[in-house]
Length: 616
Image (cartoon, rainbow, N blue to C red):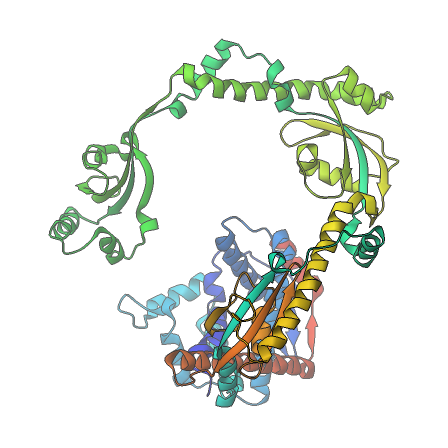
């Protein structure tokens, strides 16, 4: 099956239209000048400086719209956007070179058709508009002859690119084989053996057995590199009980934050604005008659609910519409009501009652906030003295004895923990420290400070058996249980294969029907699904295990995939298209690389650096 037109569009038309409108989309692009005119070339086809600059700016705008914040040139280079844009432009020019080499060109009729298809050149009636065409080219600083020459080249390139992949197809056998594999289902019966099913109890492990298990699994008991650190630290939270906050300050803070503690009645509303009183009244009539819903009115205006959502609004926020909006309960539509943008309908989604918190109730919250601020100021005022003490030879222990700092020790392995180890400032400093470093005062993000001493670096090594004895014993017991359950399961399998049922051998069976390769049973050991699908003949039995549990699986039936079902045919079509697309992409990349090798590619790094620096 040939690739569908829509798939060709996905791969190539965006390239064509993007190149057609590079100049149009780059209004306000940085002005670039100098003797160089290109940043790269493929054969005799140059990648113009302005085209590269505009394409890169457009890509940066796309990323900016996705992340919701400005993207600097430095960030763009860190993300590799400049390299991506240059690579795409080089590939395009490579195909331009190849189109010229084989004599592929576009006639006037095709050029006119392409011009008429560009939305930027169309008038209100959707037809080609000469004024819109001239205006767009003028804004892009392009002449008609220059643009039409580029358009001929872009159209020819798209024809060449489309011809490369249009005939790629995959045979039906390919898709049917995959669908047959993926959609095959199986019926099977299983039973689980766990410790309660053991015929005998576990013997007490000997010291030699524990040592042997430890030696065989020593990698499970490796202690990572550990940095033994002694530290002294002080945070605002530690000082809360010692900081006094005058009531006058609390009342001043309450007055300053009164709007936070005393909020008026509010509404959660959506606002749909209309161009005229008549349009708003007509919409209200249709709404009242049940002919249309508020959601449908929004959609009818070409908007989404997020476009009309105002969030939480007070009377003051709503202005002249306040009385109308506050007169209806939640779930109702108010209006039309006047706004600065025109008449509007308002949907009230929730009512929020007025909230009043007296000073007596707010003072604890205020005290904590003010106390933390004061504690930060106190700590900040002590930093110079603390640094001087350390510079004068005071130890961390002496610092803790003579100041409010608290002493502690930690075996730092790089994992975030509670206390000081949970601060990124400490983690960064601890990872970079050497045993020869002297303690210095370092600030924490919450206004606290710390200083530390690296006492010793212990390399990664196995923990001694005595240190992990309980873990080793647990592991040994699970291994013993698993081995005994596996031996018990093998004996039961022999009886099942001899014709006895699960019930007759004392097992509680569970049946699974229509089981797919993507399905799983949580209580079964890992790999159970794969093992079921490796069984070939109905009645085959297998044993799978995890530490501490063993399952017996019996294949009851193999149900071939229904290749004629709607689901199977849809899957087959998707697989054929995806495989054909992958082959087409591979063919496209291979030809692009071949053209570049034959034509030769050169990059003007000086011009490229100049453009990038001007876009900073």
